[in-house]
Length: 149
Image (cartoon, rainbow, N blue to C red):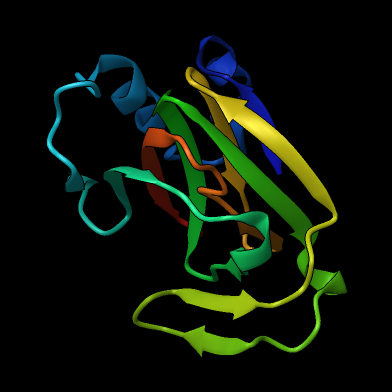
């Protein structure tokens, strides 16, 4: 898991062949005015999901993991309170892996809670169980889905 600010994105370009293109989208798109929903960047290899909503409580949070995609979650406005836990330390999924949704969910409690303010991003790899949108404030965010391989 990585937590950083957008101006530091070049540090991560070498971690995946599509990261530079993903971060260029975040830097060049008009994220305040772009409509919510799915936006194709490079087919199913790289796409963005823009949302704006209020979240849920820590008590209602479920950790999730993905197999096919790495998440880059960028906060446009508001502060997203997120949780993290190493997948290897998670119990049996409460909702087993669904290939169509590319997600499995766990009822485990997170190991770490942290705030991600506007202008910051997280990177969650397939072994990073994470919970996002744990906030009562309205958050506008982009989740970039980057194909693992």
